[in-house]
Image 1 (tube, rainbow, N blue to C red):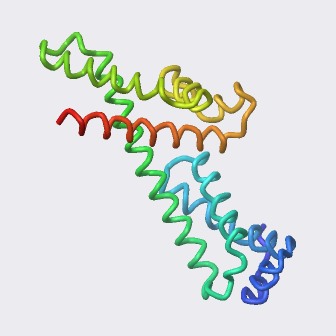
Image 2 (image 1 turned 180 degrees about the horizontal axis):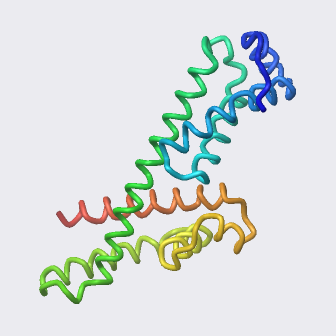
Length: 187
């Protein structure tokens, strides 16, 4: 059961002074409200838990700006909503990249010109992956080629799921940048 919050302004001022008990009170009060809200947007409990943790992390990181938070509930739900939408956008982009890779593997059903284009795309992605730092490269390959989930990768590599997620996000961003730069040179 969540704790009741009487005076959020005072509580935020306490959090600004690094009062961990005040911060815990906010977390205990809002976590049960934020989690279902984010699950409803992301449709995945694992991602929702990560996002809600990030919301509270941002509150702690921005605790010195507490005077700018007029309505704590609105602030928390706005951050949660923005992070959830960013998650959905990333997931959609990752899905498109994965489909591109899968289509390149299914090239046998395409005509010669299409096969050549897909093969070049696959080679381009392969080259981009080869240029990643070793840890990002490994995590990307475990995720995209072996199909492991972030928690499975984290367990296998003895890393936190958040570290895995961060490496995967950076790897995908690097691949996109490489592909964008390479294709703009030729076209």
